[in-house]
Length: 128
Image (cartoon, rainbow, N blue to C red):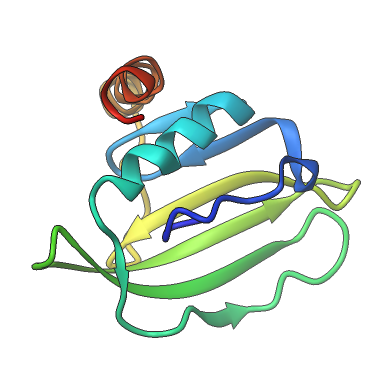
């Protein structure tokens, strides 16, 4: 996904969520556009993603360690928390930069949500 290859929509719940410190995206279309926008940042995988917590079973969460570079110079280490629903489909991706939990509270959530909506609307116009 982070390298632009995407993910087959059959593995995603219709109301899938992607959230990181910058954006909060809801639904398959918004999540797809978030990763298309991310691809424009020229992500480069510096290490293979490493499974930290095995999210085996219904309603589980798997956690992966990521180390990537964006724009050719900005290095980001993060954890990706992948939550699955009871039916086994992914219903939430949460990326935590430097492993830090996302800031909670109305102003943080609202600004992330606004960024998610704007990204979903502008990415198709700016990135072909």
